[in-house]
Length: 359
Ligand code: NAD
Image 1: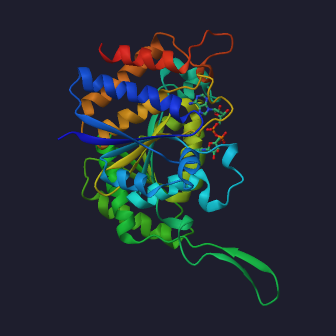
Image 2: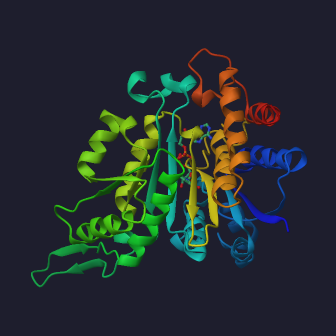
Image 3: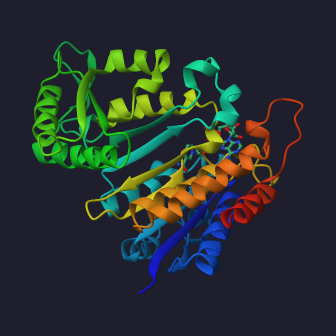
C-alpha cells in the first residue's frame, strides 16, 4: 500500500519551496520506485484565512493518518495582530502535540562548496556534519508549576519548572543512539548535571540506555562548555542529544555555523517513527512571492523523511547526492551566493535537483 504524505505548504515562501520538494517526490515516484500518495492540507495563516483556525481539525486528522508530514513554514505580518490561540505558530505547536513529536533532529551540514558562507573560518567548519537531537515535548517549556505570582512583600516573581521523567529521557536517548548508529557512532549528551537535579537524572538514564549500545561511544558535556565547543571546534561532534531548552539554543547556534538558513532541514519524530519534516527557517515574508527563496532545506527535509519515516535510505542518499551535485555545478540562490556571483531562482534550483536525481 502507498505510504501517505501530508503536504502542508503554509505561508510566505512555504508554497514556493514546498512545490520544489513535491517535484522531487514526484520524480522519485515516477522513476525510482517510491510508492507514496500525496495529500494537501491547510495550516498556519493560510488556514486562518480559510477556516478561522491555524490548525483545522481536518488537517490534524489527515496528519494522524499520514506516515509523514511535509511542512513549508507558517506565519507572517498579516496575522501578527491575532490573539495568541489563533496565531499561525499555534498550528505548528498543535501538530507537534497532536502527533506526539517528542524528538527533534536537526542536522547541521556544511557543504564544502559553501564554506565561505559561514561566519567562522573555513578550516573550522569545512566538512562539518553533526546532528542535534532535541527533546521537544518536555522540560521547562512545559513543566508545571509555572506562572507569575506576587510574594507576600508585594514583589512579583516569574517561575518555571524543569522536569524530566525517566521514560521521557529514555525514549529521546534511544532516538539519539539509533541516530548515532546510522552515522559515525559517537554521541555527546549535553546537560547541566553539576547544578540541576533534572540533569543528574538525565545523565544517569542516558548512561543506562548507553549500555544497550556498546558500539556507540557516549560522552557527556555541560551545556556551557558545549556552546563554547560548538563555535571553537564543531567538527568534534557527531550526534548531540539534549533537553528541550538547551537544544533550542544549541541547535540555532549549530545551524548558523553553516551560515545558510536556507540549507538546513529538520525532522520531528514520534514514538512510531512517524514524523513532520520541515526546513528550519520561517516563512521569509520579505522575499515571499519573488521566486528567489532557496528550496534546498525543504528538499533536504524530504531526504530526512525518506530515511526516518519511509525506510528508504537509498532514495534519501540519492536526494542528498543530487543537492551536492547542483552545488558543485555552481548553482546558487541569492542567500548562499557570494555577492556578485550569478544566481538562480527557486524553480530553477528545484528543476536542477530533479534533473540531478537520475544521475
Ligand atoms: P525567517 O527564517 O522567515 O527569515 C529570516 C531571514 O532569512 C529573512 O531575511 C529571510 O528572507 C531569510 N530566509 C529564510 N528562509 C530562506 C530561504 N529558504 N531562502 C532564502 N532566504 C531565506 O525568520 P523571521 O523573518 O524571523 O520570521 C518570519 C516569519 O516566519 C514570522 O512570522 C515567524 O513567526 C515565522 N517563522 C516560522 C517558522 C516555522 O514555520 N517553522 C520558523 C521561524 C519563523
